[in-house]
Image 1: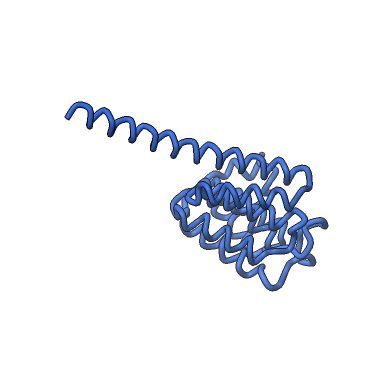
Image 2 (image 1 turned 135 degrees about the vertical axis):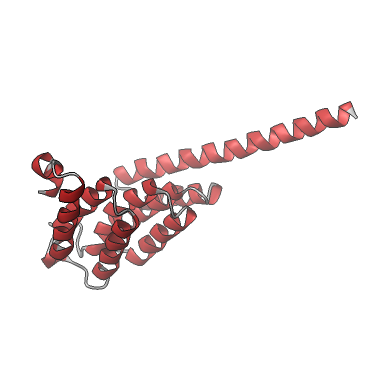
Length: 188
């Protein structure tokens, strides 16, 4: 009986080690993908991101990284793929505020025609700007008292030229933390 228990513990130990090793390798691939992206090596970045996702499909950060590659690297303008990745990341844990907050800048990239010129009304992608606007509105509704969410989104609403939504965000910020309007540069 004692030998069987020891054998079971050894087997369990190896499964735990294997599981942690897989997650660790996934993190390494994700970091490599971001490094490749910073070096403008889009195809390698995408390859590493997909490997990370394959090793650990339950990590939303990897999906966000893949979406960023679709929006900014040589794979630029694969907005539908980026949007699917953002939705998958959010669906992995819909209440994860970190994932939602980290999605906001990527959604703003989806809203523009060309990421290499200044954001604004003249640079909006008519196919996607309603989707982005809806994400911003839904996020603010989900977190009605989170001034951090409002400040983050207000900055992007201003850049994108979503004037009515920006004014609404400023009203809420004024109600929650009026001092932010005096000193925080990202929303003024």
